[in-house]
Every structure is written in structure tokens, then in C-alpha cells.
Image 1 (cartoon, rainbow, N blue to C red):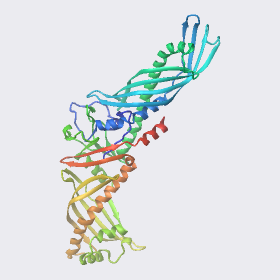
Image 2: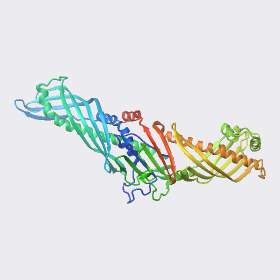
Image 3: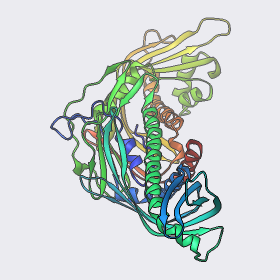
Image 4: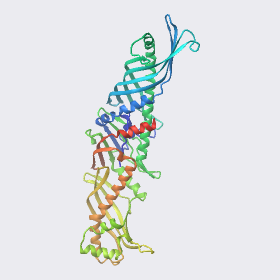
Length: 505
């Protein structure tokens, strides 16, 4: 039910997934009002994600379009000297280290130390008189640089969504050395140009690199927001993850609060004041998701209205269901229901007759629903014959786990009460052994099969949204009265970021 995207410039991009578009970016006086989903990313996650900063910064340097630099200066004896630097390119870029800091109620600060880069290009110069009339020369140049980069990422409301502002960007130059035609020894020409080109070059590098970092940040953000929007939508069912309040930045975590309303065919659920409190989440794991009972119930209601709570069983699955035990009672019941027809020529349909009622408790997720079971025999060339129809009220407590990229739903407590029973072989309903067998079969095999099928369907849905591409470590799904907490650590799939940068820039 939850989602996460994890690409970033330093740290902020994952936050942008969590702080998806707010309709107006204006909130009421209550900080947690109408909150159905809360996401918290802690400092360990920020430190891990910050390791990917180098990839983004390198992409920004490589993708920066450095303009030609021109200027002139009057020199004693030489007269006026005009110059131009063109075809500037970046080679051999490396980053020593990157650090991230969460400033409480402020911004995300990223410090990138010792960015070494080799700039190459062509230097053209001429003397005395108009540039285009006088003799000029061209030489290749290299510029060795060592730079520290400081970024302060603010979150702004723009075009009805929260966007990053990385314009607070500073470059500090520890080294900027000019070499002409590969000559590493200082000469009169090198000395002449180094002094008055350096200042202009620093300004250009700062402007273009910072501009490109902001552009890459926005490109990543748009990509992630598209992923997030796609993840919480499947056909007519959409989860509204717009902000319920301003995001919170603390020294040890970043937290965002979302409406969590479920939209189905333009109809929205209603959410009262939130039961969320910051004390419900800790800081020992990298990533947390808090999901309210209302949001989960609304998803179940939408799935019911959309006709998704239907399961058809035939063949081996049907045989496993009805032959869960080998007893005389079982054999008699199967013979009476199927009348000698093979499982391949029969089908069992199970569906929910009413909207499931969801209650979150410490023991697990309690689901109550009126469910129908219909067994039909499919004679060759004839209309299907309904051999069995029954309605039963089922209450089941489910515990959820996520392992090996699969969502596993395990029933731990179940009860069944038969409300309607019709069997072709026992129209009077006098043979209680059939009902007794069916009730036991539903408890022992039917409910586990249904929950397993729902878990598989949800796994397929999440994997279709690319969740399986991420390395989720030791996830825990914890139910409490009125809410669920999913907490996990993760590893970052660097190849996804590299592929994105190579395709997009």
C-alpha cells in the first residue's frame, strides 16, 4: 500500500516524492489535520542517499553549457589586449567527499568537498587596436581546478506543487591554474592571462554549474513526482498524496504529512482530524510510513466498488481447496457437490458481497465481510450448472510481511458463519455433513488461498510500479489500534540513477 522513490541530489529528491503536490500549498492552523499518510526519512537514510551526490554533481558539470568568455585589458607596452576562451569542456572530474546536514525548520544543506576538474578549451588573443582587425593567435589551454561546493536546498510552493530550490549555491576555489599548449612552466603569456582571466572564469563557472545543478534537480524531481503519481494510481483508484501540512525538517529526520484520501471515479472519501503523533515513529530505521485505518478502509472500499474482490478457482487450485483433507466425509461431500465432474470442468467463484470492514489492531488487520461461494459445473456444450451456492460472514485477522520482494498476507485467526446455503445434491439442506465440511474447508484452505491471492495481486501491482527494482532491507509491518507502521532500511540501486541521468541529460 505504501511507496517510495529514491533518487536525489544529495538528499532532497526522496523528500520530493514524499511531499508531492499540494493543491494550493496553504494549510489550516492544525499541523496534522486530515492526515492519512505520514512519511519519515531519518538521518541514516539521508547519509546513504548522499553517497549518490557525486553522480548528480558530475552530471551537472558534464551537462553545463559553458559560454565563450571574452574580454580585454590595457597592458603597459602591449597596448590593449583582447582575449576569448571558447569550446570549454570538463574532463577528469572527481569528488573527494560529500556531507549532508538537516537544519531544523530550515533547509537541507549539502557540502561537497574538493571537486577536482580539468577544463579544456581554446584561448584566442590579440593586441593593439580593434579585435577583428589585428593579428590574433589561438592556443589550446587546460585549467586545473579544486572547488568546494555548498548547497542549501529549500522547499518552495510553485505551480501547485512543492519544488526544490537549489539556487543557494556557492563555489569556493582552492585552485585555478592555467596551462597553455600543455606547457606546465609559467611563461610571460601564461602569467599575463592567468591574472585577469581567473576572476571572470570563476564567475562563469559558478553561474553555469549552479544553474545546471538546479536544472538537474528539477529534472530529477519531475521524474520522481511522475513515478510517485503513477505508484499511487491504478486505473480508477487514486490515492491523494497531496500535503496535509507543511513538511517538517528536524536535525535527525525529514517528515511529510499527506491527506491519504482515496479517489474512485471522482468520488473521494472523507477524513477527520488525524490520529498521528510524531512520537509514534522512532528514528532507528531509515524510512517510515504511517498509514491510517481510514485510508486502508477506503482502499478496500474502492477495490470492492471496482469489482476487484473476485477470485476464480479451477483445476489444480480447485482440487487443492476441496481435497485439503482425505476423509470419508470429504470424499462424500466432493462427490455430492461435483457429481463426478472433474475439477477441470468445474469452477469456484468467490467474491465479496459487501464492502469489507477494516479494523487495525495490535494482533493484525481484522477484516469482516459477507462473502459468496459459487461452484459451477461446466458440461461440454451446455450451460453451466450451479452445484453449490453459499453466503457466509467471514472475520479474519491478517498479519502482513514483506520478504524477497513479495507481500505475504498470513491469516492468524478466522471465523465463518454460514448465512445462506444451497446445494443441488441436497436441496432440503438436511445433510449437515456438507455444511460442516465446507465450513472447515473455508477455515483451513479457503481463507489462506484468498489472502495468498490478494497478496500476490498486490505484489504484482507494486512490482508493475517498479518497487521490485529497489533493495528493501528488513522491512517490518506493524499494526496498532487505528494505524499501520511500515519501517525499513534500504540500499540504493545506483544503476537506476546512472541510467536515468544518461537518458535524460
